[in-house]
Length: 148
Image (cartoon, rainbow, N blue to C red; front, side, top):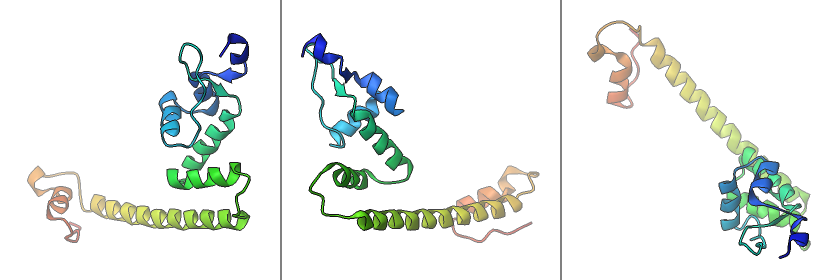
């Protein structure tokens, strides 16, 4: 590839910075097949077309929203492949499923918070280490916390 044609391309660092991700993340997405292997310069550097930034941002945002790499791969194929037969309602169902998973995680986090508050309430923060209720609960596993 000549210098003249390289002007329409970005280095991996430029692409990563523009998309708000790290260079290793770009390489990882390549290995996972989320983005195509880019052409290389005569000296072997990856040269990304400017359009890759949109794809990298798409992937980053989908990750932020909790989609797995498998789900992102599916979303990419739906978005970028012209012969996709799935309609918008299929993507809506994926999103609803993701919301349900988030709600389950929120419930689990609320339970965890409640357990930690109960554990904190059981501890006065004074006394001998061998009588610490927090350590006793951790050691005994599933036993109920006794508030002193």
